[in-house]
Image (cartoon, rainbow, N blue to C red; front, top):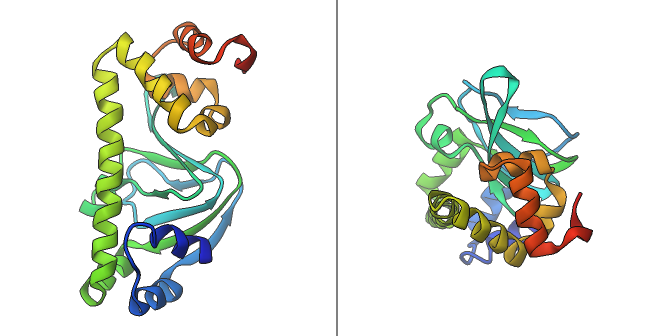
Length: 197
């Protein structure tokens, strides 16, 4: 729980009531790789803080294909945002890409917590804004076509190189919406051939 509190405390100062609420309502779970935390069509009932590991969200496509939408790793908070906040069926599957240690809070408990803990509400708002900004940045890159894909990879090299080393080429290609040869060309440009998986 200390890692959770340290991370959340970077966004806003946590008062005693909010800290106690987190101790009482966050459940620690351990999951092996390839465990579905949420399947397509289910309503997302949890938000997860990632203490250890990597999560991936993807949409199922025809012929068994997938379209990756996001990856989250240590010190990230993950959920299927639309499903979680609107209580509607998810288009995403959320799955562990590595063995994980997670802290989860249910939708019901979080919404009840908002009524008694204003700092929890502020904290949740700040987290939503943080991830909205990240998604906006990725969408901006992807709208630009080939130039944006190159910029997206360069941004990942600069700001999150560890993610590039942990996510499979297949999933990164899906996330960026490009072919493997195009991905290899972009990767060679920014990392050189010695980094190729």
